[in-house]
Length: 323
Image 1 (tube, rainbow, N blue to C red):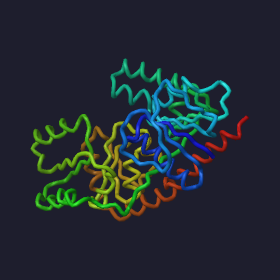
Image 2 (cartoon, helix red, strand yellow):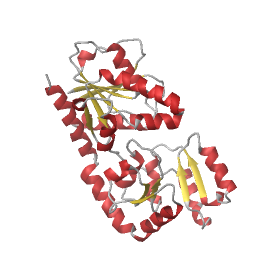
Image 3 (cartoon, rainbow, N blue to C red):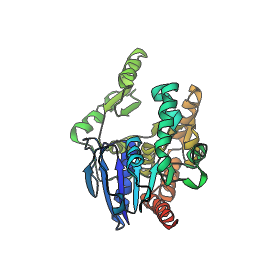
Image 4 (cartoon, helix red, strand yellow):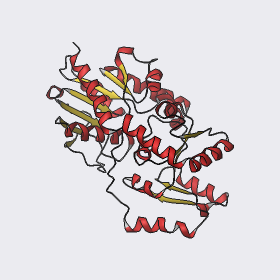
């Protein structure tokens, strides 16, 4: 099978990571893949040829069996250039809860407009893949049932990777501060706000910000537990990384988390209830070994790279079999 993936860039970001994992699995199983991208950002290496493209230059889609887009611009490209009688089948993955996410990022009015525009450009996809059953139900309001399906993500972790000497020194400073409780890996628009908040609350000595780190899952072996206090998630890649390492997980009680993990596998809390957060943390510490074992087994059974590959192979084959 020949598959073309189109992504915004080769940036180390959620949707592109999913495409990277897909390419890795399909190349590993003997399929021929290519990745096209728009922005000159190269943070990820792909196991296939990559090519930078521009929005107004056409690709010969008939060279491929499947064209799989991730993100607005990739799907806009398909919307503009897909032939009316194309041989290839076109797939797009929706990586979030569109209107919820856009409203949170841009405000309700702009979020609604951007969301409608996004739905419009996805109208020319043959198959729209949501990340969970819950997300599939969410998009059932906007797409016909035959056009929708779902596929759980995976995360491919290189367990041989370790921290650099400098990164280890940062963590080795923690024992010297016995009250340190949190290590936050990553950067973003709210980092400064969080740092100010820690200072204002007088807990700055209990929070370590290490900034953006490539392959951040390398830090997981050094932690007792993983916390993901999200307000909204399409599919939690960082949570899958923690599960792959068998780390007990404390998570907000989102529907997506309830779908993919049970109370026997993670400890959930209500973001609006401080007491429930403390209760969840205490449970993780008390039941560490059981939760660690359960979460690792669930990852291997339902969210492993092989499960991920087989699900997308089924989606592609079913689509190609349609007349």
